[in-house]
Length: 507
Image (tube, rainbow, N blue to C red):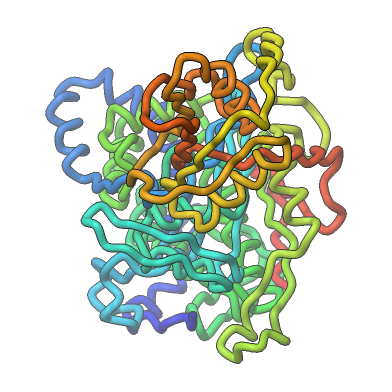
């Protein structure tokens, strides 16, 4: 999407008056480190007088929506030796102009907007390190069917820009799209708009950045020199939006600016004194809650404080920023999509697999806690002795995936069962079942469940007729051989640490 012009007042604010100490006066904000704001700040808040009333006030600031848009999520990551699993938080930055008074063009864009920033914060099982995975907004991907909480349905669509997901079903649709793309189960999401970026920067008294060369971008109106600069709130928004004068001029290159901004913000928030001082912490928390829309499972200050407590031991040196390899789609048959990009294989898939496996991207300490399951895995019981040729099976598909009953029946037929797809499947089934109408069919039902990768709990007595009935719910996953986990980062992927303080390359 094109960048839009700020109002004249915003333009005038892009050059800051120098303070007596030589620093620039502050006024700015960002898009994904909001969880960190509550880490120590929330603990300070809980210990202060009048906390109860203030917490109620903060709760009233926060908006929420449901988790997901009707699609079954991928399975969670592997538990480590202590039973811990990784956590994935999706941070969505929208281009909504809500609250800006028409100062940035596109005056009608005051609703949800587009999901122009999509960053998955993958927190390792030991909660001491994280990867911030950026998914470029113009990536051409498949968006699944999405259903909003009020029942509005957008059918699945293929080969469309990622930033269309928000408009097709809100943040939950962005979540389901990202899950389908990466295989990472999203545990919660947060949305921050333009105004939130401005407000949060002001609350931390400015964000320090350091560019190798000056930037004067007529699109975003960012005009700053090379070298250390403290961004104001207005400049902070300009900084994260700037792309025309950065690297390739696209949203892919813009990530270098967003990474620099977010890294600096994270360093400031985790520095001693920033959130331990109530006079500094309260404005930050106030601004953050006022700017947030979150998934319903973390709605409320108490839940956000709990989430932040989980993240309190993550240091900037243990946060890695990464982006999958991409290529431009100049040859796309659709002229509308010729200035977009696609994720390059196998590099992008290998990167996602490496993150899912909780392995370090660039060596160093392994924060996965090992790959052993939390408790010793029991040896599965041997399949019951059953002659498949004597067993009739009817497969019902209660999911939105077309042809699943037929393909599953074919899978069973290949191992000898007299299986066929049935009709009249019940709707909205979540948990798959294997039901047997006669007591002497129990072993057959158990064998069928094992053949399909379903747990023993899926087997139950019941039904009519003579066939074992398999009902496939949204939890069903087609059994496939697991792909090998990459042992190293793909060569076309670059990793940056949030602790880096050298100048950011613009060109």
